[in-house]
Amino acid sequence: MTADFPDGTRRVTHAGEAMIATSHPLASASGLRVLSEGGSAADAAIAACAVQCVADPLMTGIGGDCFALYAPAGGPVRALNGSGRAPAAADPEALIAAGLTEIPRRSPHAVTIPGALSAWALLHRDHGRLPFDRLLRDAIGYAADGYPVAPRVAWDWARNAAFIGEDPCAASVYLPGGAPPGAGSRHSQPALAHTLRRVAQEGVAGFYEGEAAASMVRFLQGIGGVQTEADFAAARDAAFWDSPISTLYRGYEVLECPPNGQGLAALMILRILDGFDLSPDLPPAARIHLHAEATKLAYHHRDALLADPAASAGLADKLLSDPVIAALRARIDPSRAGRPALWSEPEHRDTICLAVVDRDGNAISFINSIFNPFGSGLLDPGSGVLFHNRGCSFRLAGGHPNRLAPGKRPMHTIIPGMLRDRGEVIMPFGVMGGHYQAAGHAAFLSGMIDCGLDPQEAINQPRSFAFGGVLEVEAAIPAGVRADLGAMGHRTRLAPAPIGGAQAILIDRRQGVLLGGSDGRKDGLALGW
Image (tube, rainbow, N blue to C red; front, top):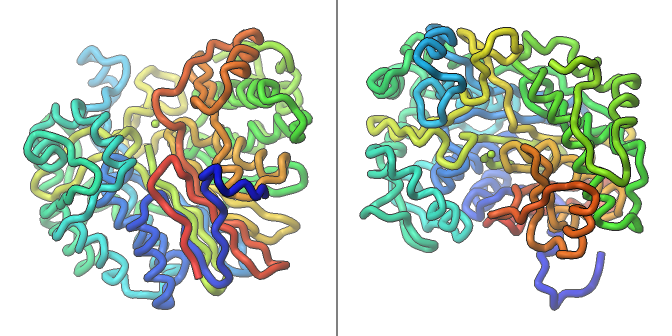
């Protein structure tokens, strides 16, 4: 770690007992309070996320989905899938007959039944310590009495004001007085506070059944949706535990949730890169190029093959196998941008993440998302719930494993991460940023493992992302490097906004210290004691 303190770069946070890292200061503070009261890592994650569901409404909400990796001290890592299902009456043929070739973002058909609260309930039941209503206390207070809008949240809010203004119900909540709230202004959500109180009193039945569910169904059906109260009631217990998938990178074991999340793509990128030299003396353009080429190959497979868990059985074993990785790695020209292709011929964007380690050594990487900023842009005024748009990931064409079907879960971009060394968990981490997340996991871990950076230094590194035929680069990447990438055949462009965000907590057992990193691209903090 350098000692160049005058550069203003954010430094790693150290603590000895417990730590939380989130992308919002109010969420970090809430989680730290829960930890100080004896709450577990699971408790702190739920409390912090609940606050962000209020105070960062562009990025997350109880109308979204959730994934987590939970590592009980001394026990096996567990993968939590809290992704929502399509309603029972979902019908791709009806949408095709209506002239659709894909599911629009601002459409009730983009709204799968939200799975976040089902995941919170299961996580709390198995690993919580404090009462569930305690975990929602801060979020309820902020929703009812207001919270100060954080600077990055305000910036994103303003950039998406036109979109949210297209829905009168959402505009009435998120554009008070006809304009997005500025940094430091106070914003409240009384209807959401009422729903959160019901959940605190009744458990998640207060969301999936009764008044809130009836209100959400009336709203969605009123704009052409096919969701029913029975769909919501069935979703109450839809979250489930699974076994993580993993691979080795330079001898470290990287764990991800299995499909329908895109963690498999992150592992594919790392396995491909494991065959290349990414040491610190590698020129920046060469490093970015290799990451871009591995990303294109992995995402090509992601888009073609990832789907509901039932449609993805055995996929991870196949795509992470030595023959497949060797075939993909051989496609990369270290000096020239290439075209992605499937290993077998012929060929066939927003979130919050947080990490917690409690005083007993339990660790969690936790992701909660409504997908695009403000999700679908559809808000039920009765419950105050803003709905995600995860259904946009479904395909309508026949023959694709991710085709829309009743009760099916779509391919997901949100992926928590966990790192092990010689069988011991050493770091929960997460990277937000929609489709960027799998590429972000690989870049972040390469920064730490290949370049010897601490978690904060690795998070601070300038980012790039090869997606959709373009290599986006942050402005901190020098013009000369961008020119070198162009000469290699990449079509580069400056990213219009910071790429993603990240949180991580490294567990240094030898020193008895936790090292936390929280992305300066967001408003958050790593806090501990």
